[in-house]
Image 1 (tube, rainbow, N blue to C red):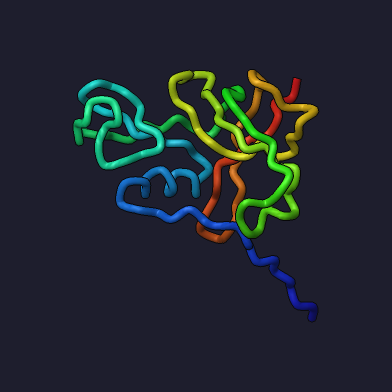
Image 2: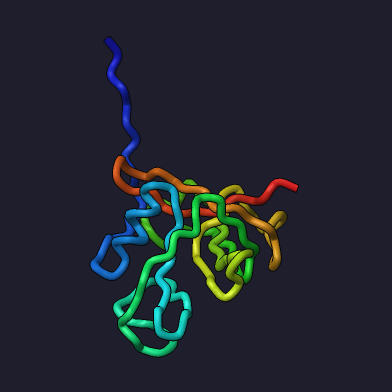
Length: 146
């Protein structure tokens, strides 16, 4: 019998807290849920204990599904690892993505396979989920096929 070799995930894994648990639970199912204020109807991302717009604590979670697209709102290309585990991903495009169906909502992530030659402001991307452990998936982005 051969032993299966598992590669240990070396990058930081986002911690689940009381405020963001529904977000990460949904990501683990490969779905995007967003926190929304029931008072002013503003989406609150990243999630928190109160609405970032009006301060109300009446928040609900709205499922956006698993097919998410957006475009690059802002980005940087990193040529050196700022945290352990990223040394094999260089150059790394770290981007703020505006969702196509909710342009006021911006989500930060990496553009996998992106570089200074194929990513600009406005580049179309699709969300994918990177299953980094058995119980954690991290939303990331890939270039949208033309």
